[in-house]
Structures are given as C-alpha cells and as structure tokens.
Amino acid sequence: MRGRGCVVGTAVAALLLGAGPGVAGAGESRVREVRAGVPEADLAYHGAAALAGGWLDVRFLPRNHGPSAVPEATVRLRWSAESENRQRLPQGCARSGERVVLCRLGALAVDGLGEQVRLRVRLRGAPAEVLMEFDTVWRGGTVDRNRENDRQRVLVLDTGDPYYF
Image 1 (cartoon, one colour):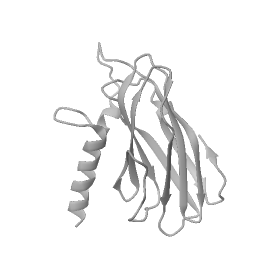
Image 2: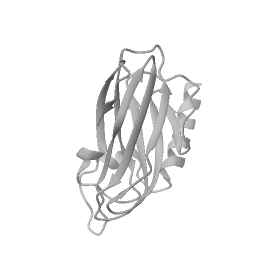
Image 3: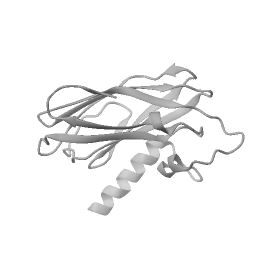
C-alpha cells in the first residue's frame, strides 16, 4: 500500500509541476548555476498561518519581482505534523504525502501578483505547534538567483493567532 501512495504522489506531482521527459522537478531548485540565455525571475511569498485545535489555516500571495515573466509556477507546502487522510483542498492544490501539499500558482507576470492561495488542513492529533515550510518547486523554466524570499519556515503555535511571513 505504501508503494501505491508513492506512485500516486509522484503522478500528482508530475501533473501539478507539468514535468515531462527531460524536465527537472524538485531537485531543480537546488541548482545554483545559472545557464546563459535562461530567463530569470524572482519569486516571493507573503502571507500568514494560524493553528487552532488541529486546524492549520494558511494564506499567501505569490509575487514575481522579475525581470522575466514566469509561465507556470508550483509551490510545495510541508508541515512537521501529519495531516488527516481526507482533506478538502482548493482547486489547483493536491496532497502529495502525509505532510505535503503542492499548489499550482499559474503564470506570474513581471512585477505581478498571483492569486491568493488559501487552504485549511486538519492535522492529526491536534499538535501544540507545527513547523510549516514552503518553497517553489517549479518555475516554468526560469531561474531564481534569490532563493531566500521564495522559501519560508514558520513555527506556528496553537493559539489561533496569525503568524506572518
């Protein structure tokens, strides 16, 4: 059963990322070398997360600081606690593991804002805190030399208060 989940997770990731033969996936984000002639974009995310009674509410706004447009982008959200098996996720988002959700952001114009992403996830066991991380896993063939603003790590305590990033 575990192997079947990995296959489904991989298929979902490929669908959301638009990955095909010869296209790098999540490992692409770790490449530091920039190839000549490849468009460059600078993605950033700002938003908030709140945890109350085992429910993690996340909202964020993607932005492309340019200098090139991004034809397609996908973000990966991870948390330190497992989520419940049944989740209602917004359109464009899919669970790819017990602690991972991928969300398609679509195209991002230069100096443009994408649509706000809002999701609510039920975590198992109603943890007192959760470490939420997210990063860009697909940028439509563009490179991002400033990876500091498209990676976030937020410790969210079960207070119901929003934690901004």
